[in-house]
Length: 284
Length: 85
Figure 1: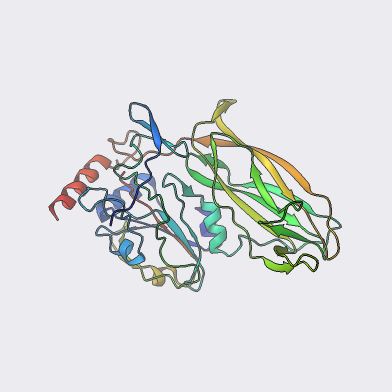
Figure 2 (figure 1 turned 60 degrees about the vertical axis):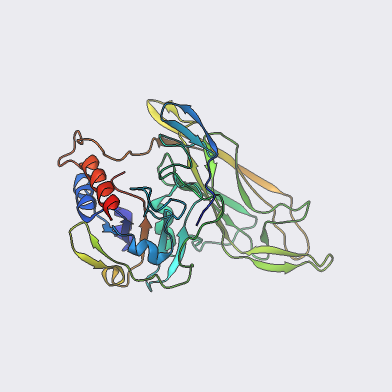
């Protein structure tokens, strides 16, 4: 949240909860962003994202959206949107902030390099279950050379981030900047090329199946390899790769506060709000 | 509209249902709020479009017009399911 305030980016969370339910949640949790109440799903419907796989008489579940987020630029246009196919998965805050600021694929200007180098980082400090954080690969590419996006013909290696298979780590849609087409003189094939320095991002999440305790702290290991091959106009270098392994603090999701709220003053009264939501919907 | 829902998964124990990605929750995939369409689902306005007006009551009981409230600053709008459950 501090990062959002420092960057001057406003954060809004909208749901179909009643205004008094979100007031209680905001007070119980010390929320500093703006929560918005849409109890009749008017805004949800206006955006066209009502979850229509839930039957209209299934209370209180009917009325919820397909969950996701929009990053909005200073001029009010949507610069990115984050919707995943598994609703247990949420986009991490760092990724949404970078998208709102238009910085997702920026590379800081620096001295030219002689050969391709890549810096691989894990953006974020922990992996609660279901929240995605990204592996970010920042390539510095010498002028005159370029990297490729998939698909590539056999024998050529595209620039990608690969995660080692693990039952506890899930990957989602990779994000990359726009590419330019390049037609090979010999074969006439057209390949997609990244011009200059490139930032690739791969969202990863953990499903709580592979957590282990290291020094008393639950952690999860995310490892893999970044692969690429750089070519100039005339010839290609050898395929290259760089391994990575991040040990990240992990955790279970924060569960909703349905109980009396031990340790929190004032309490959220989740159960009372839930009952009120069900009753109101059954009557209408 | 009858949308086919993802029901892949298995029951691991009392109130422990895992889905195709291995996430374990107390509700079986395909029931209650855990209904995810198998096919693509609508995700709202496209990237590049102006965000539609959002007017709603906030946690302080005040009506907020999102575009006016953000005053020309970038923003992130999250649609989540519930702060209660």
